[in-house]
Length: 142
Image (cartoon, rainbow, N blue to C red):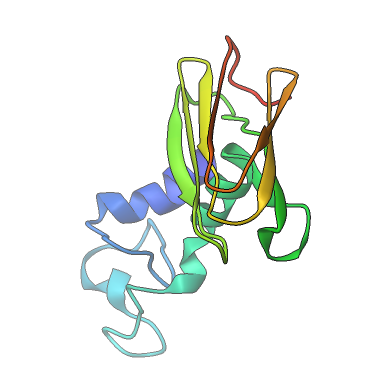
């Protein structure tokens, strides 16, 4: 999380509204836009720079497929010290939505695919399109 805050948060502090191709906090002024020998050669909307989105969905929200195409999946949040997190992970069948607040996790599954929510030692099935909530005191799926 420290790396995400420093690197990608630095882009936000510079006014970014999307992920840049490259960010160097030491570059100031117009130099921060230069790349490939061109003064404005840097892409300021670069999908390859969006890796925090994957990391947050996969590791913090804990969403991962257990069968191809998210036919089956597991949701095992681990907030890594964060107080709360809300997000969604796209799948071929729709988004898996996860909210973790005050020790409670709520998951809404996509239209197709079956999941399992693991939270505070409990396992709950997630039927297609269903919403499952588990209350507990922790902030870890472990």
